[in-house]
Amino acid sequence: MTDIGSESSAPAPAEEDAGETLATLRRLRSSIDNVDAALMYLLAERFKCTKQVGELKAEHGLAPSDPAREEQQIARLRQLAEDADLDPAFAEKWFNFVVAEVIRHHTAAADGR
Image (cartoon, rainbow, N blue to C red; front, side, top):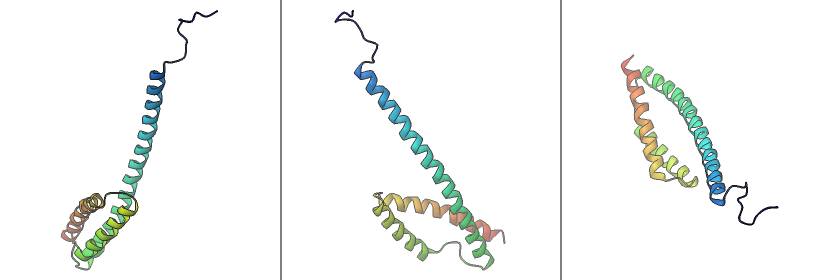
């Protein structure tokens, strides 16, 4: 027989909520980690391609930077960002950051020839 005032072995609602919250947090962080890993591999693949572009430009005496292409890409990426419900300004900042690194690689390739 159980007394009305006795404690049960079931967790208190606050403990259950905390456990569920932590489990959800772990699941979401795991998803974030997977996306970050995919992004790193995609960036590596992108840089493999841009390295080949840099070598081709250097071989043919082309400028490391192509401002017209960059403007087209910015417009394209801003639209993709809007379609994906991502801040277009962030997409442009990201692209400018990546392009600065690409141009650095292209300049180094040109200097190496």
